[in-house]
Image 1 (cartoon, rainbow, N blue to C red):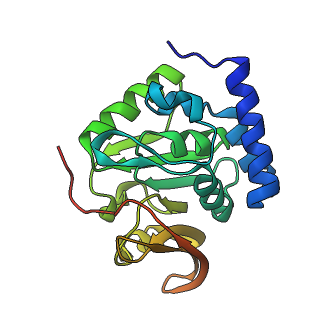
Image 2 (image 1 turned 180 degrees about the horizontal axis):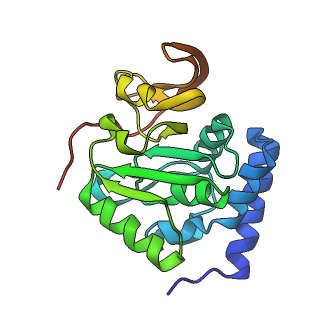
Amino acid sequence: MMHDSFVHKGKRKNLVSYLRHKIGISDEHVLSAMNEVPRHLFIESIFEDYAYEDRAFPILAHQTISHPSTVAEQTELLQVKPGEKVLEIGTGCGYQTAVLLAMKALVYTVERQKDLFDFSKKKFRELHLYPKFQSFGDGFAGLPTFAPFDKIIVTCGASVLPTELLKQLKVGGKMVIPLGPTDEQVLYRFTKISPTEFEKEEFGAYKFVPMLNNTNQ
């Protein structure tokens, strides 16, 4: 049962206020999307009462759903516009995907964990959410068939920069990715200014689950 009560909606409104005033999120499209997406439906029901606190929770395959503040910050850095092609590496439980869809992006999403791929696919069906393409595959490889992309978002920490993803970005496009060792990463934004040149910006330390190659059945 996909239940989204007035209580849930009230808690989302409080979360959005927190993101705006405490975290400093100013992109109204991001805030509106996060006010729209029912985060509690993407996590275990035992955590439902805490779904709109700024906390990460365990999900399938020993992974986590990111803090709402992290989702908001990454999404704001991406500067998504309606109708843009966005490649998401790490579908996870599907919450970030849903936020991008609420922003009217055309989302192509890849997940390497079969349990999470199956979970998110079922969740999207239940919530009538429609990514343009959902793939069970290796995030390091991206989706060259559908390239180039306007934006790329990587929701897991990579120890090295996946250069194949940069190739799949159109000139003028942006990629937001956490890079660094497994215990702590730094969030970066790469802007492709020519076929071989990139501008790199740094946005502070975060902790993400590691980005792994290949797939896990």
